[in-house]
Length: 176
Ligand code: RP5
Image (cartoon, rainbow, N blue to C red; front, side, top):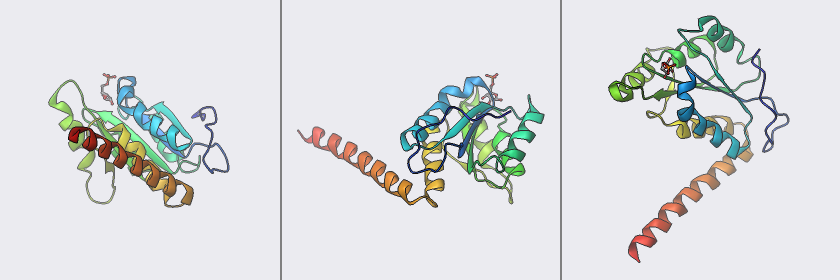
């Protein structure tokens, strides 16, 4: 039922099974969550992306979270807005690391989503990134995976060096 997307060319992976699950409460979250997928593309990390709503499709949520580890996922990125219980509920039903992305809704500037996700009570952690920061969610997923995949650590080093060069280039421009 949660069929993997077409294989993504891997960077040192033995197969193309998704390692990261990207889920969101609504298709309206897609603009915030797609940057996470683009980061995984960049690092050649296979992923799946779908909609799972904690309150509108609760049975689908249970099925997704309970089957995640057995299906080969190694981490889940979950984005939601408003009373954003999706990441916390997923984390309650899988032992995999869960990264939460607070999505900014039409009211309260996303602070409601941020608090809903970051304020997980003791025992069930959700690694929470900044409001609307799908990029950091993707990067954090790569870092989590890279702990067991040396090639990815090197790739992350390269990525960080590129960022450094980009800023240094801007410094140089300012001094011209
Ligand atoms: C949440 O409600 C979703 O994660 C989304 O951020 C928000 C609004 O959903 P829609 O009304 O746009 O479907 O469940």
